[in-house]
Image (tube, rainbow, N blue to C red; front, side):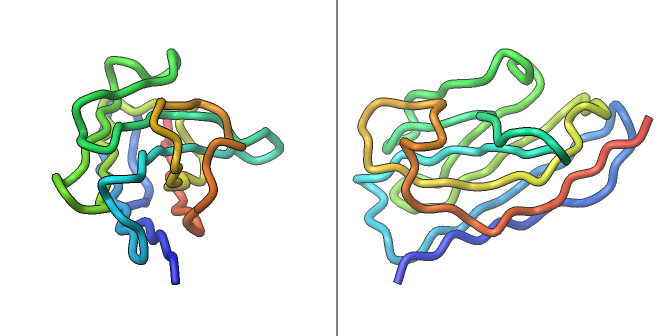
Length: 124
């Protein structure tokens, strides 16, 4: 059974940092790219970052580039999202996702497994 479980969400003030974690079970790490998405109230789910199967390549949304860093544990389906210099606009539910595609994608439909999400709130 495939399962993705996020953790690390919470409430922070603008300028603070937060690190999200996601553990995937039931998947073969060498065949899965991993990504993070987020969804704010009343908005569509949007791409945040993605990382390749071996962790050597990453892809970021323009809105968070330079502030967020995606990483993964080698050989495992554990992925992290380090969020620095956070802004109120980063407030959203953050979702971990997994894809069988080799190329990194920002499209929701490219990912076939999703976690339940973790709430991140940034106050000004």
